[in-house]
Image (cartoon, rainbow, N blue to C red; front, side, top):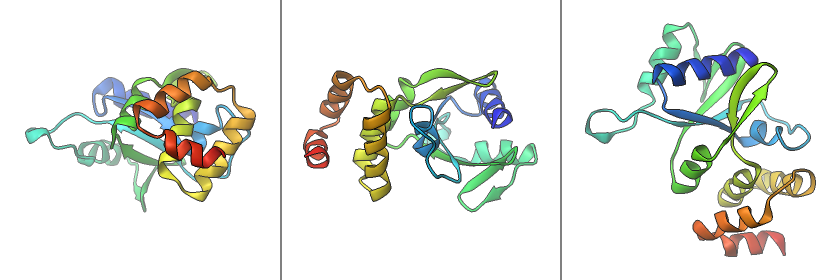
Length: 165
């Protein structure tokens, strides 16, 4: 995975993407015991194209130019299936903006904070997200005031209450 992260960092430096952060189950493994997952979910802020449209096209072109091929909804980068998820709402935008810089072996990367992973999971609302929230609540060191502030900013207090009572 180290080489995969290096490629993401290179793409960010080259402007192929503006910013990225690891989310999903792989992002959660930076805080809790590993979860079963087959891909690396990467939230990306993309450069705006003409007319303010966002497109994964330039990113996929850059990946293909390096010999990386699509496999379903993922791209295999150095043997790791990577799913690129453009920032699609205010919560995800905030999560990427406030992601933490961490080291993976000797490679710098950016990971969504545990509190944002919880909020994103609550927003998604799937069974596997409930399990992720349970694990993060049990194993991660959560800043509960920070989480409450996120939930309030994104009008998710009711959902949180339903999930936790």
